[in-house]
Image (cartoon, rainbow, N blue to C red):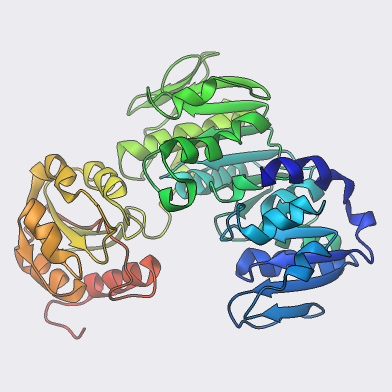
Amino acid sequence: MVEEAASTAVSALRPDALAGRAVLVVGMARSGRAAAALAHALGASVTTTDLREVDPVPGCRAVHGRHDEADFLGADLVIVSPGVPARAPLLRAAVDAGVTVVGELGWAAGLLADLPTAAVTGTNGKSSTVHFLGRLLAAAGRRPFVGGNLGTPLSTLALARLRGEQADVDCLVLEVSSYQLELPGDLRPAAAAVLNLTPDHLARHGDMAGYAAAKRVLVERTDVAWLAADGGWVEGMAAGPRAGEVRWLGRQPGVTWTEEALTFADEATVGLTGLSVLGPHNRANVAAACALARALGVDAADLDPSVLTALPHRLQVVAERDGRRWIDDSKATNVDAALVGIRGVPGPQIVLLGGQGKDGADYGALLPALDRARAVVCFGASGPEIHAAVGGILAESLAEAVDLARILALPGDSILLSPACASFDEFSDFEARGRAFAAWAAQTPGGPK
């Protein structure tokens, strides 16, 4: 495997050993650009490559619009962006030639090994859990860096520390994707959580077993693995080789929860009565965040869930008008995420479903969760398919769906955008869709669109 070759060799390439070495960075999205800037600052001779024609990184040789095999075979170190599969033929050729190949996150983690790290992965909820953990740590007086797959690449922090900036960071909170775990390098967290596993990214991983195997790499590299007691794929990760102990999210020994409190195996508790974020799934996310915070040395008594707020576009209340609450859950881009959102909002709902659906999506699975919906409005490119599965009202666009929801909603209702689809039929991404929804929700009825 590519990962095995990388993990055995990457430790030989420390910052003081990079000067004058040939480094190739593959993929010029955000993390690749950060890695290239860091490698250049460490004195390496850096080449960047991407099949797209993109802007060069200052100080680096750019081979954009193509890949040249000679760059892969002639490098001392190849740093790979997460969007590039580890099994890509040119990466395999580099490993066969004895070249060290590592992912951006794994490489940067090795350069920041002095900082205790908590890592979070899973199909859904990892961004919210990482956000919660960062807020809990900061409120308890710690100085976390929060990033990885969410927000700022880890290489950006490594570069800032190299320049003498952000020296006050005392721990790392990382969202880690299955793509990043294909080439984990020197990523070895003090504690990690696997929240859940549902079908996703199967085109890259092949099947659920391959997807689970990619996630399980984190269990093999952490001192304490917090696993969801799901009776399925995540629970099964406890079997086989691992670096440390396993604790459970949802049963003991580990952490359990009610609406009022979390309870840990050592009988420590954390109250939840001040928690304002919506949904039972978020209590599970808060439990994971508190477990990881304790693993990083924070006392349970210093954890205050009342400081937590929802991430944008994740069950975020964006407007309250005339007794009606508008909730943006635009990040729910698949059926499983939409189910979580719909179940997480109490009381009667007007649910907006639609956008650009994924092939093979089972929208009928939404029906049991829609029993509290006063109405369902299906919109966008997949609107007719969703309408055929769950019924409701059909609209051409999200704007039209918002207009219909405004007419249908009664005082006490929540108008919930939890679309179960990607946004690309109308918007550049789910953030743009969520911002548009929030802006329309805040308008006076009949106002301009």
